[in-house]
Image 1 (cartoon, rainbow, N blue to C red):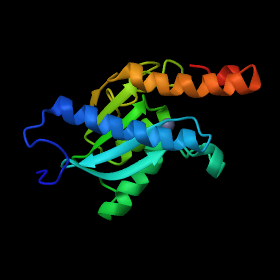
Image 2: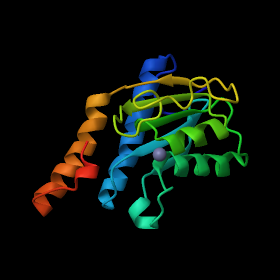
Image 3: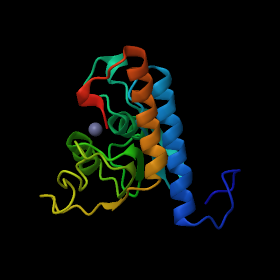
Length: 174
Ligand SMILES: [Zn+2]
C-alpha cells in the first residue's frame, strides 16, 4: 500500500498513527509560525495524506477556520467527493463540537487526537458528540495519543505570548 519512502511495509497501526500525528504537529507548527493557536490536522486515506490544515481563525478572521474543518475541505477537494468514507482524521487537539459535527457529516471512519481539550473537547472530555449520535454512524476514536508532545506545542505558544504581553488572556490558557 505504501511503496514510496514513507516507512517500512510492515508498519503497525500504532507506528502509522504516531507518524501521522507528527505530520499533524508539523501542521500545528505552521500555524504557530503565522501567530495562530497551533492546532494541526491531516486526513489519511489508505495510508496517504489527502488533506492538511491548521487553525487559521486569526488569518481568515473566521471562527469556523479550525484545523479539522480546513483539512476536511482540502481532502474533499483532493478526492472530489464530500464523502470521506474509510478516512482517518489525525488532529493534535481533541475536536470541538463543530468539528465533531463535521467529522460526522463527512463520514470519516476514525479519529486519532493528540491531547484532550478539557474546556471544549467533544469526544469525551466535555461530552461526546460521536457516541450515540442520532444518525447512528460509528466513528472509531483514539486518544489521547502523544498527549505530552501535543500539549507542549500549545503550552509553548501561550508561554511565548505571555512572555511578550506579560500576561496572557485567560480564555486561551490550557
Ligand atoms: Zn473545532
